Image 1 (tube, one colour):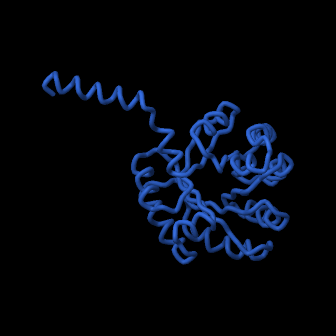
Image 2 (tube, one colour):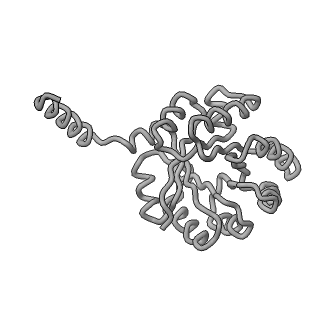
Image 3 (cartoon, helix red, strand yellow):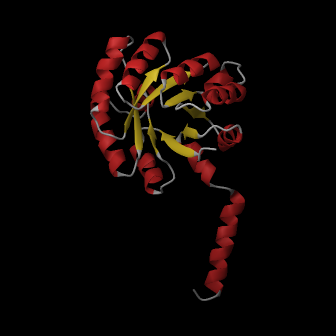
Length: 218
């Protein structure tokens, strides 16, 4: 089984920086909504990339835009020029699939995002994209069995070069549940990742250890 990998899904530079400095996450994922929520503009994408790479990100994801194949490809060119650790996100639309196919043939690291069906996951694997991002929370909001759908996506991607990078994860249990189903990669907001790292019993045990060392004269 592929070793698990965590990403932080945010444009909050302070919180992203802390997680990168701690060595907890492999990289950073963003999309236009996340950038807007973080008060960022498209002109800041190069500086964000440079900052996060300097802070230790092994991969940084930015989403291309434009609505049609040619616009997606044109804007993806600017993203790819940022550096070797960048990956391009492309939406799972007919035009997005057409653009993703070209980008993959050109050697780009591509993630097809907002994948909602097993059939779309199969199409991604046939193209050879590196990642797909199904949105667990949004699936559940739509009344779908998101965990089952993502598990089946993982099954159709097995043995290919395409990896499931699960997104819209709202609790540590979401991550654990999908990992037990074989999903390798996960991206989540800083609050979810912080919760993943903490347990009240662990915290109280650590306090007891420190108190004991104090009594030992350390």
